[in-house]
Image 1 (cartoon, rainbow, N blue to C red):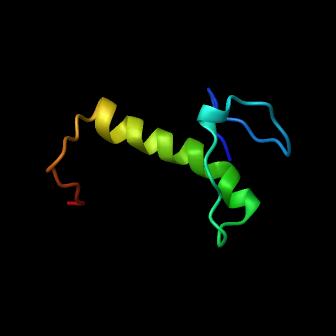
Image 2 (image 1 turned 180 degrees about the vertical axis):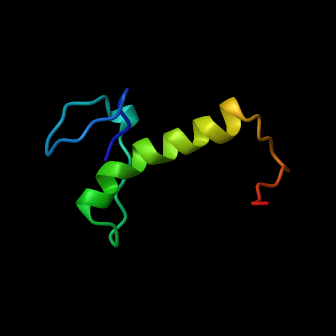
Length: 61
């Protein structure tokens, strides 16, 4: 799997090796394809936009 700008789905892609992530054995390819975009979106929402910092807690009210 790889992290690419703006999200992408493909059976094959050419990306810089610094953007590649290993796919763990129990993870199937469709799930691996969605992981980088979902993870980067969550990170952006929590840390960049909401200002969550180390030591902060996230909870539901």
